[in-house]
Amino acid sequence: METENSVFSVPMIRRWLKEKSGKTSKLAKKISEWTDLNISPSARIVDLGCGTGALSVEIAKQNTLAKVFALDINDHMDHSLEIPENLEYNNVKPFSLAECNLNPDIIILSGVIHHVSKKQEVDFIKDIGDALPVGGKLFVHEHELSQSRTQIIERAMLAITEIISNRCLETMETHYNFLSRKELNKLLEDNNFRILKEEAVGGRYVTIPQLAGNNITLAEKI
Ligand SMILES: C[S@@+](CC[C@H](N)C(=O)[O-])C[C@H]1O[C@@H](n2cnc3c(N)ncnc32)[C@H](O)[C@@H]1O
Image (cartoon, rainbow, N blue to C red; front, side, top):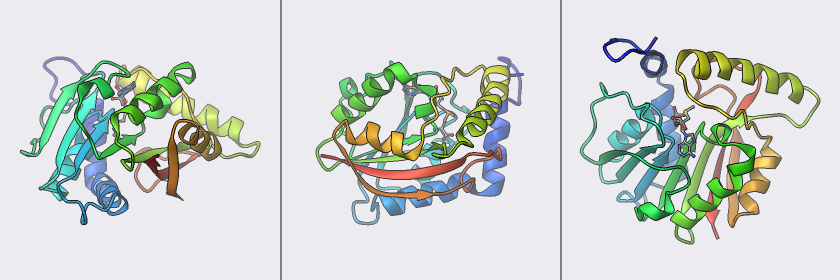
């Protein structure tokens, strides 16, 4: 669907739907609140796996004194977006954030962990930990599998949605690495993060309705 000359692409349509619903703006506001950007307005923020960049743009617009780095291993950027002055977009190699020396105070992962394979999830989180100073914050917005037997159905439904939306429409690689809240917390805690707070947010910040809920987590590098 996305060709070099096409006006519309799936990421753009999804961004438009999210914009219309105000969900991206609401998520940016929640991230700003949870990471205390009112107290540290000039924070350096990395939005890793920024995709179209829509969330990075909202965060930069809502926090004009902050410096936002929108990074992705692929160029899924919606280049029709108006980029605020305090936002820089770049492509990076996988697991090389620490090498970039961006000195972030805050790192955001929105819908990214399930795109990283199970085998590489520790390397991914370790790299993020290495990029942050002690006390640095990590905000995660991610699908959440329940701990009950419905997990099997949730996983299958999520995989089907991901196949249709990422593999067929956007040709985006995904590893279906969906985690329960317990698994995510363990991954973080085993790799030098302390969970500060978490909240089940259902479909509040996502465009496509899903059986599984979503969770937001704020962790601190220790
Ligand atoms: C579902 S999109 C999420 C986009 C955006 N964060 C959002 O909330 O709309 C997942 C993105 O993660 C990126 N990604 C996958 N593995 C990554 C990695 N190891 N490092 C950085 N980005 C990665 C993909 O290229 C893709 O753009």
